Amino acid sequence: MNINKNYLNLEDSYLFSTIAKKVNYFIKENPDKDIIRLGIGDVTLPLAPVIVEAIKKAADEMGVQATFKGYGPEQGYEFLKEAIKKYYLTKSVNIDSDEIFISDGAKSDLGNILDIFGPDNTVLIPDPVYPVYVDTNVMAGRKIIFADANESNGFLPLPDSNIQCDIIYICSPNNPTGAVYSKEALKKWIDYAIKNDAVILYDAAYECFIKSQELPSSIFQIEGAKKCAIEFCSFSKTAGFTGTRCGYTVVPKALERQGASLHKFWLRRQTTKFNGVPYIVQRGAEAVFSELGQKQIKENIAYYSENAKIIADTMDKKGIWYTGGKHSPYIWLKCPNNMTSWDFFDYLLNNIAVVGTPGAGFGRNGEGYFRLTSFGNREKTIEAMNRFSKLF
Ligand code: PLP
Image 1 (spheres, protein in one colour):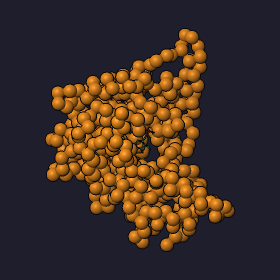
Image 2 (cartoon, protein in one colour; image 1 turned 135 degrees about the vertical axis):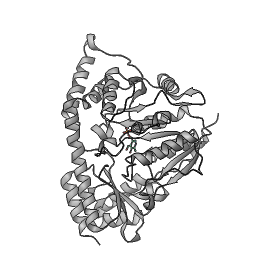
Image 3 (tube, protein in one colour; image 1 turned 45 degrees about the horizontal axis):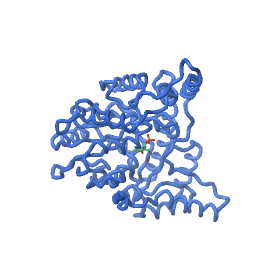
Image 4 (spheres, helix red, strand yellow; image 1 turned 120 degrees about the vertical axis):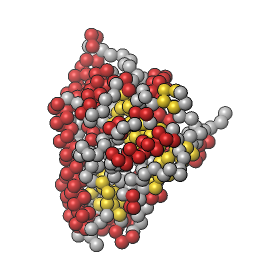
């Protein structure tokens, strides 16, 4: 037998284990210090009450013969797809419900989608970015090239007509930089993709943090996208589903390559390898789109956004360059005094007992930058920023 030797090419990720090691050592040496963690990329607020009620009701249905459900449709229940279709209409995007595929989260689909593409494609991935895009393509042995995101392009690289690629990843609002593409910039990517016969994999996991109609919260708001893009969304950050698990992927029927429908390929892939998301979870997700659900999740998003503002205001006061914060839960700041990402990590931990995430963990261009997140508790975020204000 042969192993998949591509796995030998994966780089070990020491980012979060190194952070944990350093923090544990600090706690051991300084048991009296109150550590504040602004490094987490996970939500902390509980599920909204209307979602919990819907999940409980669905669980009750499963215990009654007349309403019990076995295997559901692999692509998701119609009630949830209809709710998502209506949500897209509020963004002036018209998609058919059978273009929506319910998943157990964006991470799975971002990895699984690669099944429908040939192994010899060249992939273009922004640097820095969510590490899953790189690792899933390394596992498949694809050639990867990077689009440099840096201070000069505001961490929003644009297409380069001299570069040829087949699969393009775009994450907006971006993890880790919090930067958001404008409609004009996305149009450039769409034009490039159509011209080069490439497909854009658009990760919109943080779309709910966009507060301006002027900024795109779906790539399908831009003309031409249905001919070249697949969009990945998630209830994780929108409604606190990181532990409940539900997301959705939109594959337009107009998306064809080499005479084949990628929508049909994905449908075939999902019906063969996936058996759907639990009915109970899908009922919970449906509740997100009810009037009360929208009100309750927006309260949670507003809480995180206010935390982000508190962090961003502190950076403004200190004159520190950053992206993100306004339409994102992430603040991506330039480490002061030319410190490296890890130097700055140690500096914050040792001087003010605040934990963040070194930018170097997200790609080569992340060196010298640092990610703070707004998913923490309000009082702790304020306290962390009070401590930060007294530095340098
Ligand atoms: N995409 C990005 C950019 C993320 O940051 C994350 C999670 O942190 C995901 C996708 C994964 O989302 P999910 O929880 O839906 O799998």
